[in-house]
Length: 571
Figure 1 (cartoon, rainbow, N blue to C red):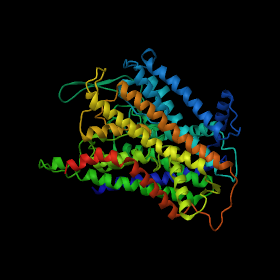
Figure 2 (spheres, one colour):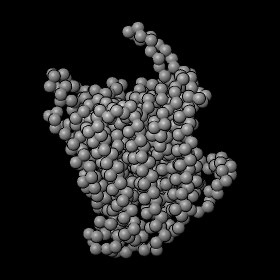
Figure 3 (spheres, rainbow, N blue to C red):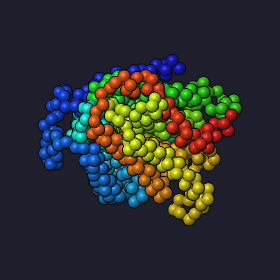
Figure 4 (cartoon, helix red, strand yellow):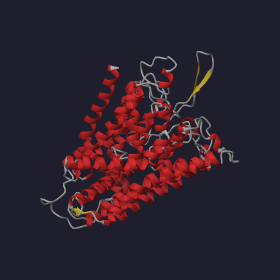
């Protein structure tokens, strides 16, 4: 037990030791100051020249979002057809087939929006070529898209009154060349030297102890696993993700992967404070997010270490905790730590089967994705938190009888309406999707579909409801993890979650960037004795209260029908 605690503490401290200097570096790099990666300028300038892009051209928030949405639309179209015809393309040593149109629709949207919700099994559903030119490519670009959008928000508040929030293309390219690519090389080398495959050979074979011939998939997995975590993507090379003994062979690789998926989300919060020259505000936000993380992590670990009461009733000792669905080489504490971090950020990778977790663990996993503002994904974490921040500013302004202000700019009706819309869209997508799925399952279970709705769930009842709720929550949060007792590779789930994926990704990006752009154009109001300061611990706690109250009101009824009902039924 002590060694498990030490492993979790060491993982967290190493993450902080990397994230803090990385955040300072990102602030300088995106601000255009001199940094050690300036040797990449010739490569970047070459890319801009070939593409006909003028990286120093100013953009207002509308031009910024237009550039972002246009390139993402191009990737959607290109990737859709490649996935359908992947069996006709080279680098397919295992002879994997092309995807059906509905699966390709879901998959390409999922990877474009940084979710990587896989309704296919990695080693058999795609080829080596598509793993590279679709999956790995989009893992870089989707993460860079979120980072670029966040930096646009940073830029809006760096100076007093501006119309220019920076050039999307400059931020996008720098996010890849000076952040994601160098770190991916380092992480991939660590994984490869610790047993993760990195070859282009087809399946290998071995004879098991039972005498069976077993085919083992391999491939250049280390490279993909590096960016899947650094970019908070989460799509696994293998079907069971980082629970697979080749994708995550040892405790060293487990620590490497969990650290990798947290350093950029943490660093972006620190970068925000340094970039806008308000370090205290950045640290207050960082503190609120850290408190939120521990509020989810501690009960998760406690729940898993407590064991399963149904197994205890059978007289079985559970000295190591609830081990169903977990890997012995990792243990329940590191598993609980991972499950918290992977659901508060948008990684969604798993080193255990979330479907086998204890019911209360499921509550915390779902809440982490529903809140979606405790560090969050690359770049988008600060965007999600910004919406909560604007609502907290508005409520606080009303409480003290002043016009709400944020960093010297008045927050007026238009900004609050956008923030409210973004806040409401997530519960709408999650609840409406789950309600429709539950209705179809219960009313049209025997419908003459290719996959009957009655066959969707391996676990009807409370847990089955949780599986459907989790799927839509994961899609909306661009997370990608799942309660895998759900049969999701069919037209209903592929199409419905596809639409939730794209709305859940881009509306929470468009809203904050638009608000930031609007505020940046307003006349700057110097701070006075009556100014509501947003860089205080008091206001940080106010924001945390807003986050908790909004999400409790939105999601408690659904949680009560699913994991909470399952928990009380086991007592």
